[in-house]
Amino acid sequence: MRIGGEWFDSITEEAVADRVLSALAEGRGGRIITPNVDILRMVSSRGRIGAEARGFVADATLVVADGMPLVWASKLLGTPLPERVTGSALIWTLSAALGRVHRSAYVLGGHPVPAQRSSTEDDVVQHVADGSELCAAALAASCPGLEIAGHYAPPFGFDRDPSTYADVIMRVADTKPDLVFVGLGFPKQERVISDLRHELPETWFLGCGSAVGFVAGENRRAPFWMQRSGLEWAHRLAQEPGRLAG
Image (cartoon, rainbow, N blue to C red; front, side, top):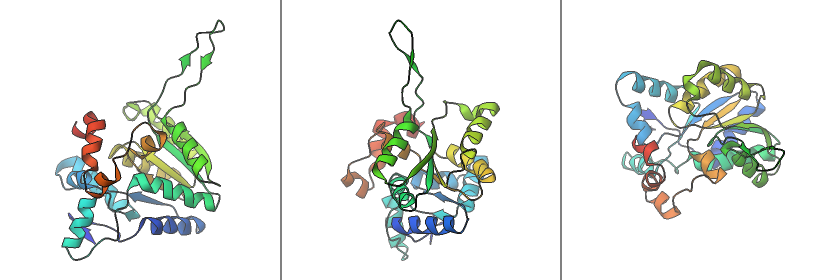
């Protein structure tokens, strides 16, 4: 169905996972995008940013509604979507589905954390887990059978340096995962996904925004009542005012 000029797939969260597993079994990759109201506003804007955003949506294999306002709009238009399908929920559902068939996932995103030095006489560098590692560990612990192909939290501004950007692409491509969770925020994550698809045509990708941080425990999701009431944006704005308002 069409909302705000864009087509959405009328599909449930579980059906998304089934579609991904079926495609993987046939050697077909794909891309899932989860537009919310803010993304639709960007898609409908003029200029280069709007054109780029529309291209990302058009390129997606599955387009699902991340936000109760979109579900409500679909009902008013007479073609109701079955449910809201968020990146924050899909990261768990897809991981569980991959685990059932012993498939692999790569986690790209989360807060980068620099190594810290210990206070011992040997001055040993102490390992500190970044957001991607914490997310990958949580998914592996909760989803039996899931194989973690790798994880990486790129440094801030990596996309502005060609060498660093190329390194990020190669880090992921070299592991040949079945699915990549890319939590870098829209539209940056979609640019990365577009480049990775050229390297990994049989892989699936989910641009999942803050989901990596939620799983890693870096951020907390809104209470369920706020999610169902369409107020999750307010909770996120309180946690990350610079990211959503900037």
